[in-house]
Image (cartoon, rainbow, N blue to C red; front, side, top):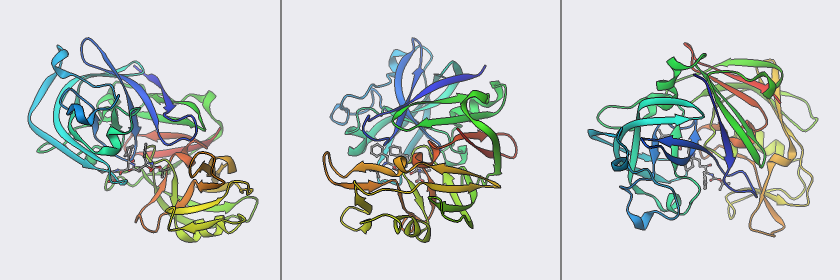
Length: 331
Ligand SMILES: CC(C)C[C@H](NC(=O)C[C@H](O)[C@H](CC1CCCCC1)NC(=O)CC[C@H](O)[C@H](Cc1ccccc1)NC(=O)OC(C)(C)C)C(=O)O
């Protein structure tokens, strides 16, 4: 069966992350999880998480689920790009998203979470939608929800229709033609080491000339901003009055009153344009005249990341067929 679930921004002021309701166990326990194409662990705040590390998050209690089974001898430990992390043990249980059910999904229960997770009450865990090779469970890696669900879906795909400061959707098993305009351009995916890695064909700043280039990067719903090569972001921010790459603020900042150009990136023969408003990401602090850019340099990262700032400008198809591809359409 196919399914559809909401992608809800956790903060009404800026799109730092999106969460999606899921149910786990019998009777069903509802949690709101961050669907993350940039990792492949499904982990949740749980009854095994020390109370001192839980601050308002909903938790999954396997002991209250008649279908929960401990995956004996299995543990996990994950560290994300932003330095946050978590670790714990593993159960299998029924897991449902938007009507799609996997009956024995590996659900990783947190026994430790880092402070940034404790302080983020709206995120009750993650659903990794990267390739299962990235799963951290030891000694046997576990399959993602998508890999487990694939065979029951009409088509082995999920789509992301993230929106700017609004609720979007993740669809599983089908492509909703009402969610995009024109054609979907499909690109090859490099599945090693396990991200949705593709090559963009170039970029343009505002109405300027298109610069053909091969920009290898990952499509990552779990990363808020978009991180691209220094020469790309330098040419973008060079068009913005007062923009500076600030060590103090950790990236490009600009006067909130400055006018920003849009940013266009190539997807094969087609392209996607990110509106200027998406790149005017947020004031440094409430009421500040200094704003933080949604387009930042990837030079310190070692990888280019097409995060939410780019993804919400498009309708994106994550095609899990063999070989996998990624599809991009305007909307
Ligand atoms: C362990 C590996 C197998 C996979 C692992 N994958 C990643 O690190 C990428 C992955 O998409 C992870 C997934 C995120 C981890 C932290 C919680 C939210 C999800 N992305 C990340 O690690 C990137 C971190 C995000 O960009 C943060 C997220 C965030 C959300 C809410 C509040 C504060 C911060 N945004 C964020 O910092 O936004 C600012 C810059 C505006 C403040 C890796 O590559 O190391």
